[in-house]
Amino acid sequence: MTTTLITNIGELVTNDPEAEDLLGLVQDAALVVEGSRIAWTGRAADAPDADERVDLGGRAVVPGFVDSHSHLVFAGDRAQEFAARMAGTPYAAGGIRTTVAATRAATDEQLTSHVARLVEEMRRQGTTTVEIKSGYGLTVKDEARSLAVARQFTEETTYLGAHVVPDGDPGEYVDLVTGPMLDAAREHARWIDVFCERGAFDADQARAILGAGAGAGLRGRLHANQLGYGDGVRLAAELGLLAVDHCTYLADEDVDALRDSGTIATLLPGVEFSTRQPYPDARRLIDAGVRVAIASDCNPGSCFTSSVPLCIALAVREMGMTPAEAVHAATYRGAEALDRDDVGALVVGRRADLAVLDAPTHVHLAYRPGVPLVVQTWIAGRPG
Ligand code: NIG
Ligand code: FE
Image (cartoon, rainbow, N blue to C red; front, side):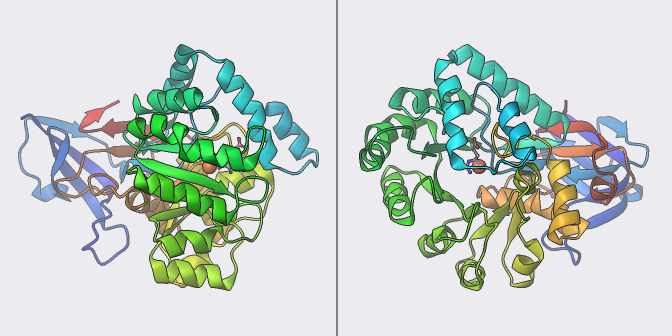
């Protein structure tokens, strides 16, 4: 197998869990890629020989971002809804139905090329693993095809038939989501998610839907406590879910429940930026011993950004995280939130997924917000 030495790395973020510092930083570093995997990391001066050599001229390297929450399968956009929001109309879950109508009207080819464009947009900004949800089809056929489209781009697909009740009786819709829709979705999905919020699904409905999903072999995740206080986060902790996402409004009992269950809180700061809601308090969670991940939540309604670097900058500026914590949350914790031990760190044996920054340190991701610092993204040992 061909080996490639990537050297003259000014600062390497390894996320090595054995290191004393959170990011496992190595200055004046190098790494060796063998095929798709990392074969060696360390000081450039100690690097072994390799078949090929790439000199990064002192740039920083971080693990590729692991974006554990996105809704990329949709058609249309909601720019006018965003403009109205910036003029004072609050965000509400019901806007999802606008996208549902556009998504149902789109062809498979249109949906696929749209996802391809967004995944490429993410890759250019350093994202190397992305989770993609359905949730804008909300019929048996449209949920199944949304997931089939998503599957072309990632193994991390999530069935979100329980995004909102599209029309009719909510009880009948839950029966559909836990019955024929689940049967059609399960072969294309790894995860099942529910939007547990006023205006969407309550905790009892979420419990029933996640229970049916578990019976079909899908692991649960939840959207919870985004628009107000509620039972969703405590339900996630009670069920021992790996991650619960949003966590904007948390009571002390919610924080305690997350700490005790070990459930990861995935925070989505692009949403608060795009809805003008208060930001979740990452500092409070981390200080309480809760693991915090950051993801984009890229979707046409509450947050139409594909940029993890933007989310890192917001997390540092608005949520009390240090730059190191935010970078770790968008890489290592993102991988944990997807139960992946092959990505999220640049240590021997993991996939060679990395982002090269036109900057001397990872700190610039927060220090230089809005600047396109990612100059190269490698996935599975190949530069893109
Ligand atoms: O994660 N909260 C629910 N779902 C998306 C928004 C969906 C939409 O507004 O279209 C979210 O924020
Ligand atoms: Fe979401």
